[in-house]
Length: 385
Ligand SMILES: Cc1cc2nc3c(=O)[nH]c(=O)nc-3n(C[C@H](O)[C@H](O)[C@H](O)COP(=O)(O)OP(=O)(O)OC[C@H]3O[C@@H](n4cnc5c(N)ncnc54)[C@H](O)[C@@H]3O)c2cc1C
Image (cartoon, rainbow, N blue to C red; front, top):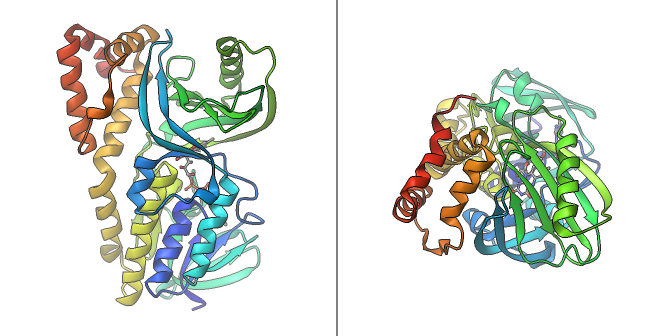
């Protein structure tokens, strides 16, 4: 064996899995086909403190480009609700480098510029064919991002509802003062079917605009172009300079499927564990279980399954509630979304507390108390579409 564990893909989840497994005594190699950490830079570059806190890590100022105070959720009519909370726009390259350094400090052998081409089971372990030769290991952690080719090669289906991946286009833009506001703006409605369009200020004259849509095909550029025009008219801008564009898939409503097999664990976007913070926490859980498997010399799915169980305990309800909410949103008309927003407009939502399920119950109670007839706007729940 060349090593105990090979992690394929230096995603936030993969880096955490490698770091945790190594710090608990396993020999770990982390492979990524990128030429270097953060090159090219991933378009995911924002998160809320509340979500990141689940990792138990401290947010490090060295990778923060801008501190924000929360997000407005804006309905088609312009009605909106404010979610206050510490949030960040990241320098994503610095962020990736920061955690790669942590993994290296924990003893991970990090190798960029190596693509994994195939993974074959061999003698209770694995042989990986890579662009730079073969490597042998006892356990594989797959973290190669959305639509995982490696999981498919291993015959696994780690995403339950692949048709519900939100295909996305995000552009960095430049215009006078566009980066100054202190809140993200997320626009919901039929212009962004199934999810949202975004405006994320990142300081000075820079911001990003994003389009995230479900069940519209992978190319959302037409939807993005319409959003850009709408944004210009909303903000009274004649010209917006596009600096660059990135595309990708966000598995926000796609739900983890088959994420554990004998000797294999799938983590991060490739396992529908959407979100930087949530992906990192999943990576930590995965790395801890992987190290335990190596110590016990038992990489069977029966042992590795405690990764799936621990993840389920921490996140399953939240992800299913999120999917339920986004499915309802996808089927609602703009008019129904506006009706729904009337209930939330002007409300201080700081009272929400407890588990996601408890928060959903608190919201339902609030709706029934404030405007019982608005419940009709949720009839989309029962709509087939
Ligand atoms: C446009 C867009 C914007 C987003 N914005 C946000 C955001 O602001 N905040 C947020 O929390 N989430 C955001 N998301 C969700 C985001 O996808 C996840 O949170 C997270 O970053 C996903 O990482 P990942 O696990 O999919 O893997 P990735 O970060 O995509 O990493 C996979 C890695 O695997 C490597 N790889 C792939 N195949 C191989 C191979 N065969 N051999 C070796 N290496 C390989 C790749 O080079 C890559 O580095 C966004 C998603 C998209 C598409």
